[in-house]
Length: 235
Ligand SMILES: Cc1cc2nc3c(=O)[nH]c(=O)nc-3n(C[C@H](O)[C@H](O)[C@H](O)COP(=O)(O)OP(=O)(O)OC[C@H]3O[C@@H](n4cnc5c(N)ncnc54)[C@H](O)[C@@H]3O)c2cc1C
Image (cartoon, rainbow, N blue to C red; front, top):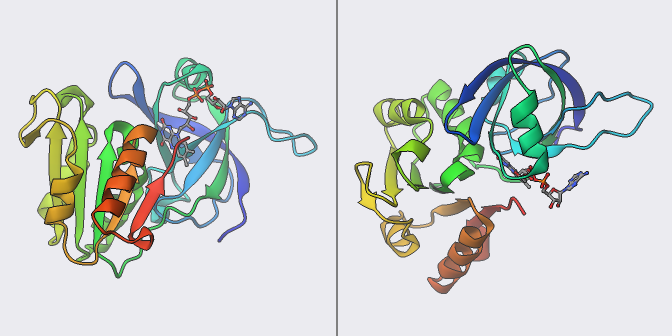
């Protein structure tokens, strides 16, 4: 795994998806180390001085493709508390911040069938993988099971549409709580997802901690070995 590197970056683009979910695209001012889809970075708003400690930061999944790292890094942030509120109110196009990466073991082997389960903004750690798969025209068997509260919270529709159109073995199942999207009405149904999964699939869980915990236990009860359950725990 690459040694983490601290890089100053400039905000190139800000996309507000909802009142509390926003994507930032950064242009790095230094050399970005290699990272893997599924890894995360630290984002610090205050200046970093090499002779001082790394400032307060929070961690976010890297949402851009590993191959684009020299040109861009991206994150999608849901405003939850004090620091993400500060990010939301501070960062605009042209702002500078500090990034530190790569971190994390939420990785996607290319020789396995993958079931990617995302609750809400929990879709972020999958974005890098999906962009990489599009670039490589990957034939890997990957199913995204995406649960959202309403149509307004369904993010990255264009990217997901491209995956469906261009990747031969990509599938998507949407669960929408209020029924405002085509697909299943209600919350993610882990028993149905498990029943439809190809033999030997790896199950990836990303979303609210309570969802991750419940689904992990349910998958274990259904006989899925720990090795086949991968968690992106935001606690
Ligand atoms: C692997 C991973 C990936 C993640 N990816 C994303 C993502 O892609 N998008 C997203 O929206 N969120 C992501 N998160 C969650 C994100 O890191 C924030 O922690 C979360 O949004 C909480 O919001 P906040 O920081 O504003 O809350 P705050 O109220 O500011 O703080 C929340 C918690 O941060 C910790 N904390 C407090 N002070 C400090 C400090 N000085 N330094 C460090 N930690 C402190 C405490 O545990 C506190 O309870 C991820 C978390 C993890 C662990």
